Amino acid sequence: MSRIDRLALQTRLAWHDLADDERGDVPGWVLITLMTAGLVVGIWLLAGPALEGLFTQAIARVTGGLG
Image 1 (tube, rainbow, N blue to C red):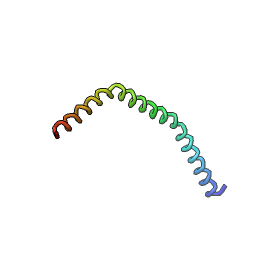
Image 2: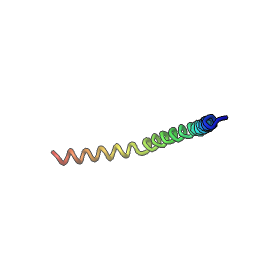
Image 3: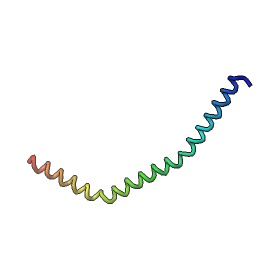
Image 4: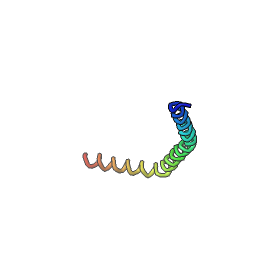
């Protein structure tokens, strides 16, 4: 086996190892994304009414102060 053939083989094996490592991470990223979305929805449900009240109050103060 020539030196170039060995280098090509090593490169292919290294690429294959990298590809295998990356594929194993996909379910982890999907889980993290879904958990983050769940947390955002949960916080929004809990804090939504309070944030709406703050926003309404702030708008009322701004519009009341102009007129």
